[in-house]
Length: 358
Ligand code: FES
Ligand SMILES: [Fe+2]
Image 1 (cartoon, rainbow, N blue to C red):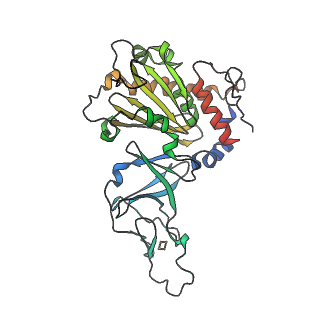
Image 2 (cartoon, helix red, strand yellow):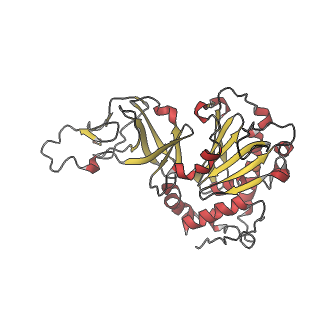
Image 3 (cartoon, helix red, strand yellow):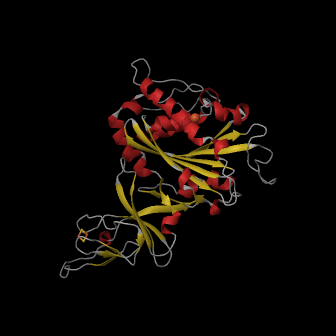
């Protein structure tokens, strides 16, 4: 299957519905997309002190990769394979403070940086330990107080999100605190990329989100494309909450309601004056998706939850995504066209999907 997307939006067609319908493509995307991309692993606080470890599974239904995040004695953070190099048992079973990682099956021990340390009963084993007897190292980067990992990186995460960190360097990301009671998981009956498609345009706001439409100046809504991420700039109507932007900044003078950044392939960083709403879009199956909303608040800001109406907006989005999931099964629909002014980010996403999968 060839999913090539014309790079000229005015003549391009949307990605073929086979992309969302084919189990074979879905399987292929696990390795072609997710196994090569930067993905959220945990908040940096899980390994904030030296000696802390945090085992987790990276994208349970997609990659199903057991990893363990550690901070060693010298303060360096690591992401390691959590699979023992002896016979494949899971090494770390729970989070906590540890001197070393010791496997509960036959007692192989590793330092917190993943290096082989000791093992009983291996006297006389030749050419041992070899480098491959260490726990496999996985690329790890910290950004905005969050930990991101990549099983097979070709570019750094810092480089990918440079457009965000450069533009928003004036915001107090280092003071951000996770707000558990404002964080929710949703399960959507739809393909993960349909959920992203919907996120990537504000075109539908006046039709689908009556409440949000009250707050946003639709005519000033804007789109910016970067290599591996894109931005939708939501501009507030008069009297609605907006950023207090320093006068030296290029956005000074604009009443910015939110910076909506999407980062390839499945992360959304919605940045509001009060903090960050991080959305993680995790496939559970071909037409079932887990959407994790994680809320982080800047120190000293008021949480204006009602004004943002994030949960109401989410349910409205889910309804339309589930309706599209039904629609794309039709034998009469395989592709559509893009609005050249308002669907630039969807076009960008489809081009990246096509490139990754073809
Ligand atoms: S599997 Fe870990 S020590 Fe044997
Ligand atoms: Fe929406």
